[in-house]
Image 1 (cartoon, rainbow, N blue to C red):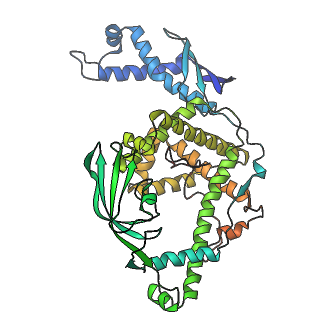
Image 2: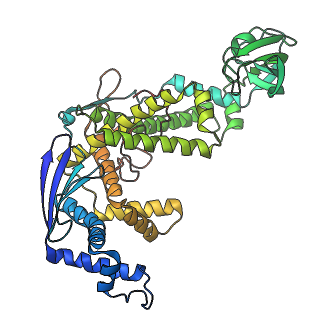
Length: 464
């Protein structure tokens, strides 16, 4: 078989393939062997039907068409491999010779993944919030712990934010009681926004015995009203933050020891959050360098992928898509627009990471691929061999290799972007990644990630 390739406009490539009669003969033989097994002819066992009889019964033209139908995909796949094409759509095939007899020749025009420009990637800068732990942050942690030991005292004064009110809730829809919106002895902290919009404004200033009504125009199942009977108002009295309380509330003997431990916890959490933000913003910054037009084929495929993932996630929570739309205040066109926005971001980031991997000659080794398969097997409780076989059968091995390669590209990017705080001062990368007993930075291969916002739900209005 001989093949040549020619680049066309619009990220398309034309493959010209020629197969001589001698090579095509093996495909003819394979077709006759299969037909001999499938065709039932009285007097002959399966597989023993003479070729000549098959030609008479089926016709030479029908057999020729079957030979081409069966063999052409393999010839096309071989030509794609020889040309090292990264195809993203089904080909348009035109048989130019050999439909009836003789050597086979065909053209295949196929869309390929574009190689985009990421000029300027060496000078990317990512801004992170300061890593220093402030006294105010530690105070907030201490207060949260104090609240767990708070006493609740009845008060006669009007309710304010932070007070705990006990209310009976009566739901009303279309002038009739709505049991699905009603509850007795519901304890609620004023100011937390945990009932519906407008409830806190109504509850502020109320006393035991007061009744307030709140309009609820966006309730699931239709608009209605909530009637709230305030039965009790209690204030939280927090214990003093002293050594005695620290000893009772924790394993530490003094408040200073407790504050030091909380400070360490806050610092560790801030570093972990900063690492995630750094990873996300670095990929976003790289993706913003891509000004090339995105292939509609890739975007459409990613829209379908993101949409399916959303539906599956909602189903796991027992929520139908229509319920999600109603709760988020969206219609189908809003959802479609959000899916397209996310898909375009994913595609842009994926192309940018592939370009970075090409430029920096980042590869995914067979050993890394095996390691990723073993990780997938451990997570799913299956054997690595079974996972590998399934990936091989579905054509997913190369996709997995690309994901591992992209993940290594993210790790390279994280190591090479400049990091500054909100005042523009450089951030010590070693300080950002240091942990108890280690200052090693992650290599990025433990978790495959091709793009930011991978788990973002449409409608969440997450920026970036």
